[in-house]
Length: 272
Image 1 (cartoon, rainbow, N blue to C red):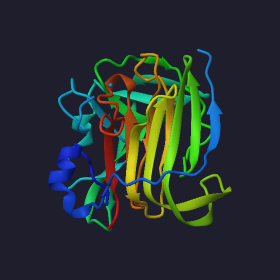
Image 2: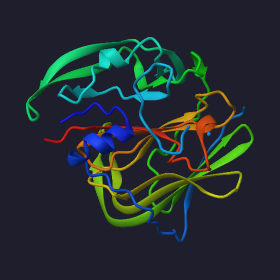
Image 3: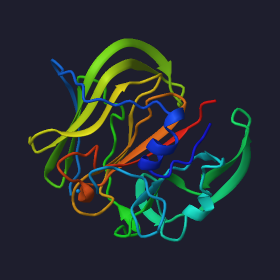
Image 4: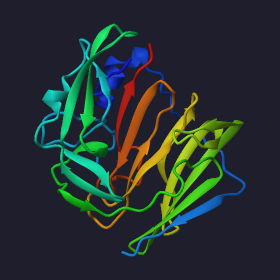
């Protein structure tokens, strides 16, 4: 079943009966790390939320299919003129006014109508932040999207070094075939934590999960969306194979050096 997730607070109050996201502050320190480096020449609220109205409040919106039940808000009423589309074109990234269509459908397992948001571009995420401006966005190439426990990824941007580090317990490993029909190693991970440190300073929390059910996090975008000279991140963060989940971290909105609590998140469930 697919839900329209309006706010993290609404999810807690309304949808808690059909979700099972149980994150805890439990970590395991790795003995060693494998580093990958990416280079370039060239701080929101304490409790994260997804806000879909009014148009002058910070919001994110996933390009997805949504279940239209008694709790759902019509996407056409949410996606007003204030929304921008972060999309890729020929290896470059841009912000522009959203350009999409809606396809009506029906969920057989849920027994309710659906509305699918179909972007007319190669889009990552729709954004509604009054301070964001349309135009080209600086970005870094993602050389390793999944950051498993005991792995690190280093990004160099504007003479600053961003070290992302994965912690946790690998309890199983197998080989899977990805969307490009290539075989890749997949780990079963528990007690996961992703952190980020800048220029060797103390690590900041980015994401935590007690366990994953046949899925894992994946970095979707690294660049400077808010044009403040610091890196921003978009990460896919599902903890179950029957959900889509996304996290946006804007450096200009981070408070208390906690990237996780300062992030904007949205989840869409599609279990039956």
